[in-house]
Image 1 (cartoon, one colour):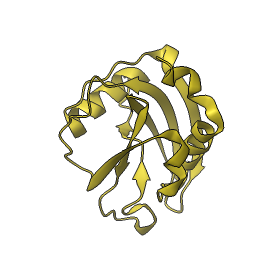
Image 2 (cartoon, helix red, strand yellow; image 1 turned 60 degrees about the vertical axis):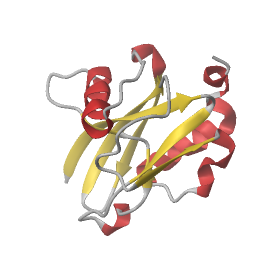
Image 3 (cartoon, one colour; image 1 turned 90 degrees about the vertical axis):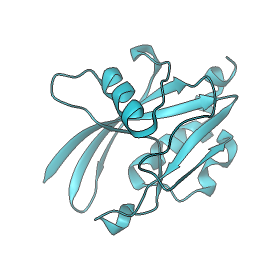
Image 4 (spheres, one colour; image 1 turned 180 degrees about the vertical axis):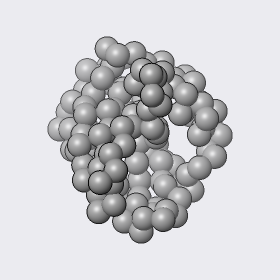
Length: 140
């Protein structure tokens, strides 16, 4: 089974978190699901650099993050591939970006994240956030 290493951004602005809705996919089980934005880590690329590159490519968005902002790694097996996803807390200076690949997005407070239809690999991040793991970050 194909294994993919990816990074995901938990983007915070003014105590809200950016939730992106995927477009249609060749995998029906991922079509139109919500996710934290990010993408594949290229060979020889650090995870943080991969995250910054992916956000720039997919959204024209520059964020502030570092290895110190690591949040959670998830291993998930989908029917057609396996994913290892490393998530990081990121901070945006505003809510403005250019949505290039996703069909929609919402900014939500952590307490209501579970109201969205999330991709299965992203659900553990949502659960950890809703359990209060972001509280110290939201004080900034």
